Image (cartoon, rainbow, N blue to C red; front, side, top):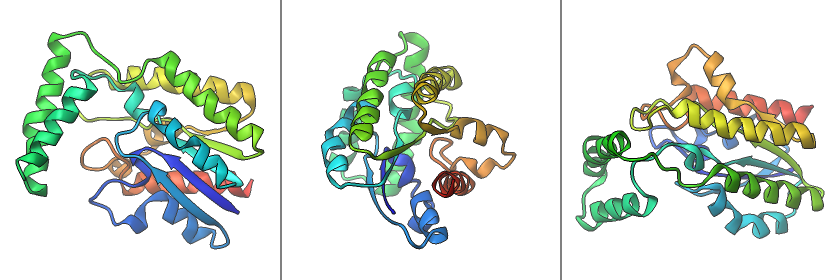
Length: 227
């Protein structure tokens, strides 16, 4: 079986883990007869994901694992372009990796949080647009006889996203409803992580999957393949 992982940063993060501990590699470790490719865009939205859709379909996978949405759904205090400019400024200052992490943690993230308190909350992609983007992916896979498995959004506990569960649940409810209507397998990562006692479901940034999170997701993907 040939699988394409069509995802945002969750399949290739966090940096604190070795890449062998990310869920695509964990699936391969258990199911040695599969082959796979990972198409992951860090910081990407469902709208961004469409830029790779023709390429994904053209590869002819038997199964696509689709995992986008966290960058659509989360509440924001800064416009996407503003945040990107600030990050580019950090690179232009030639800060090293540790300095950039410090700047994000103690300057950029507090600015994002404070902005949500004093301005109307924004989202990078409106829910209706996210819905249309997902339908585009789902229908393209169906027309090409490609099986699709969807991962919804995990909980995010980083303080800079105010009331993150509310926004994530709105997105997850939309995805689950479409998947139920069209008989598409959706792995409820949000609930699986909520049910788990270990704090390692999330990385130290309280945003990306942690070690335990990658294991949980890999186990659910393996179940979907075997079933």
